[in-house]
Image 1: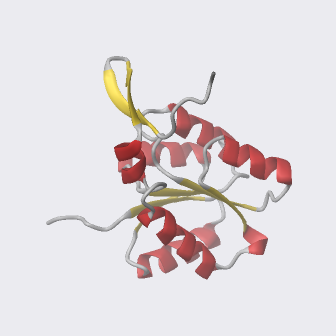
Image 2: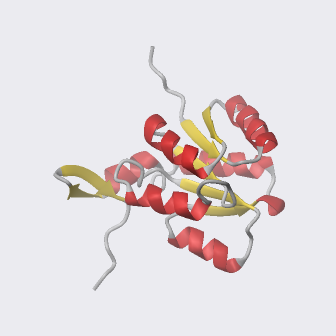
Length: 157
């Protein structure tokens, strides 16, 4: 029984949005895992090992920036592409989200469900941004004696 469906973790405290995205993404053939806050999102990211995470920024427990930072600092989750989907549309927030490692930052008011589905497909199938590509093309490192992969080489000079 091979489970070939790609997994998406959708982290948002809005119950209605969770239902809408689960329905739409499931229809597109994805397995959708839901989390209602940042803490639950981090737990499910580690347990379910999703292929992509869609992350809200304004949530109880931990906000999206905190979640993104923890995901990036954890060797088990750092290669999972994260798309931020938020109402925070200020340039500083967008820059911060992308600097923290998100592959894209989408503002809820400015985007349609169809475009989000298209972006999800793009990142899941990307030869450079998908989880498999990041692991394959990454640079092996050792942390606590275990090997893992970094998505980008260090740019320090």
